[in-house]
Image (tube, rainbow, N blue to C red; front, side):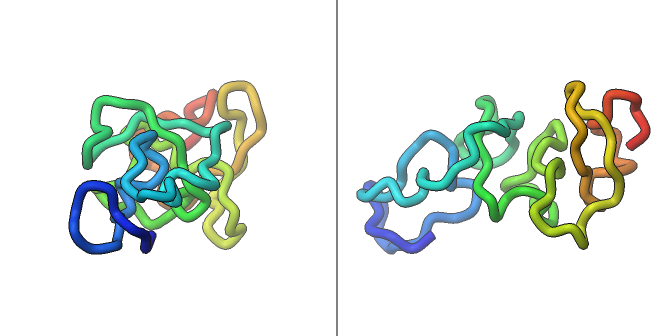
Length: 114
């Protein structure tokens, strides 16, 4: 995200700094449009010990160690149908799981099929 930064020189906020409940932009642009319905245990960046919201660009994205969710919940409910590997029940709700979320040991599906 390009914006006027609060604490650093430059105007770019990296992916792990978006939707982490810590506005890095003066305008809070990095915290806008975050999906409040999906949260995941995060890794990398400042929010390693917190649960975080996901921006649309982070859902079913190619895994990157700086923004991937340690529980795999960033690989659920894909917006791009080409990335869907399977559909299953997740927390008792039907959901899609991405090709990047299967066979990773996340146990996303209630029945463990992933």
